[in-house]
Image (cartoon, rainbow, N blue to C red; front, side, top):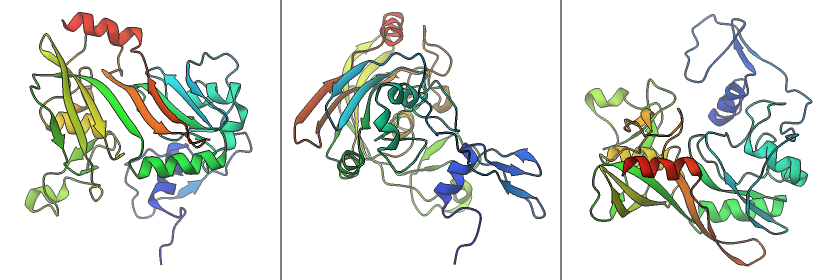
Length: 294
């Protein structure tokens, strides 16, 4: 039997990310160790709605029907608030215009958010408008029925298509990083390299064009592991421009925390049964960075 203050590892992570965990009176961060004798406290959940509507927000809608929204997420904006009352995320903007999305999913902080994009990633973001649509779209995502094609500017020359299938795990010491796993189970010194069992991951990569010392590529994941495209490209020797966390070179004209990764295309069947194909234009900062890399 598993006993503790959270029902699962994921629930514990969400408590920490929401800022509700205190150890010896101090707010605790994900990845910090708890020692014997430490006093762990969980702050009660606030009655404030998890997703507060943003008073002033701009929303670029790529697709809309009675069940589904697809919007263009800018970077480095977060997808959803980490604590009640937080504003300035994509879901704050969506809820201001489509209030029903706040209750479309099972997690109050995420509402009808069907998938996530890293803060530093821009592009097409899918949001359900009701619980039925959320269930349908989450199942489609899990079953690989939604085609997601990202565009990334990577260091080096990619001459032919690649299939990268290394499993991905959490880094043992850096809670911000994920790592590509070469073999499992690990042996020797590699045994302490991972903080979690690896998850299967598959990314198809195709070159689009060379730009100076970089290659613009299309990357299509068939799985949804955290940081998957960033980790897979870096592990293959082609880190994304501006992605300092995974060894990417500095990208001219990109703000700190921004890297050249954009969810450019979606193909899916909406809950209504309609086939949807969406293209999300490059934002101005990525266009500028392409010019600077040439």
